[in-house]
Length: 267
Image: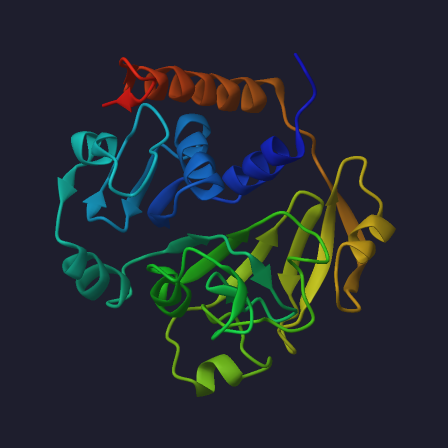
């Protein structure tokens, strides 16, 4: 079996972080891959909730978007988006929210809106979606994103979703009900907020990663725990299950379109 890629390691470590049961609000991409991998490995009672209104989705393949029919077809129930947010997320019924972003700062605030000035940005990103509400109301939040000095920045270009704002009790003073991020999982290691200051601290590095690599990939002076753990490498079962899921997904999505004359794919 080929060695795990950095993306696969990140996905597997994120899957390990999920409990055996509970309600998990899932986004597309690595969060969705990690949540569905966890369900196959150890979290059979984990209830996956997607923004489009599906509760208890059990997709056989990874969805292309929150509106993918695979989610509705395999869900325990489908409700309106308004009900998902008002009666589930804002009511405090979501145990874990999974988030990604384009930028993060030392207090785990996230930007998924623009790179550069808001009125004249260098890059306009997909936007907030449900992320601000997930960040504000989920009991726990897990953040997953690749680590580089471009993503782990000294100052966000735009604050889309609140982590711990300016640190310490700023989140509570702002009236945010959820617990905030408990960990940030990257392709280099794991960071956790300091219990007092709420600043992110490097607590674990993945197998083969040096601490100086993590420093070089962070735009602020990164705090490091006194004892940094080393992440256990992916097991054959974890890696094999993830790759099988990804291969099955790729085959299924390839069958959803067929070429016609002129070369344009048609659903």
